[in-house]
Every structure is written in C-alpha cells, then in structure tokens.
Amino acid sequence: MKGTIKEQVHAHKSPDGTEYLHSHENTHKHSHQNTKTVLNRLSRAIGHLESVKRMVEDGRDCSEVLIQLSAVISALNNTGKVILKDHMEHCIVDAVESGDKAAIEDLTKAIDSFMK
Picture (tube, rainbow, N blue to C red):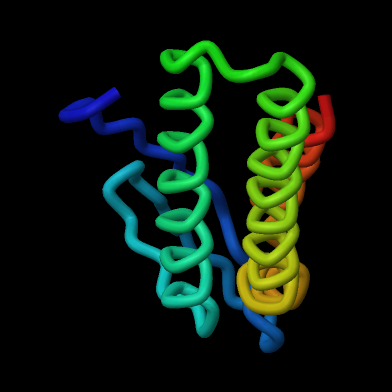
C-alpha cells in the first residue's frame, strides 16, 4: 500500500547486555549486494511476460503459451531465491546476532507465502 507507513518496533539486546528499541517502517530501505542482479532479473521476467501476453493476444498455441509462462514463473522463483539468500546472509544474520526474533518471524511468514 503506497503511502501507508507501518511501523514495527521491537527490542534488541547488544552483546554487552544493553537493551534498546529499534523500529522498521515500510519505508525502510534495505541495501543488498544483489540489488542490481535482482532488478535485471525482474526486468527480463517482465519483458518475457509481456511477450507471453502478446502470444495470447495473437492466439498462439496453448502449449507454447504454457511453456513460456512456465519459464516466467521459474525466472520469478529464481529471483525470489536470490532475494531470500541475500536477506538471510545480511538481515537475518544481523537479527540473530541482536536477538531480533520479530525479523526471524517475518522471514518465516515470507517464506510460507513465497512457497505457496
């Protein structure tokens, strides 16, 4: 939802035992090493999906359309795997180190949704 700010506040405990509150808003921007790769993959998938749409508009054989649609779905799933791996290597490592159970719960929910 564009323009909506959802704030999530949770506590962190540093290695020295100091506790502090930390919040994330949906406007929080993550920076990962694979952002460019993900954007490129998404651009290719969008182009491929537009091509599949044209195939349907042109009345192409259903088998051909399904094969190409399967390729788009596979590309999106593989892109999701890149995002998941990057998130686990960065955000989740940080969350585990700081005891951020909410971030781990959020990841679990996201994985459940992604794998449906």
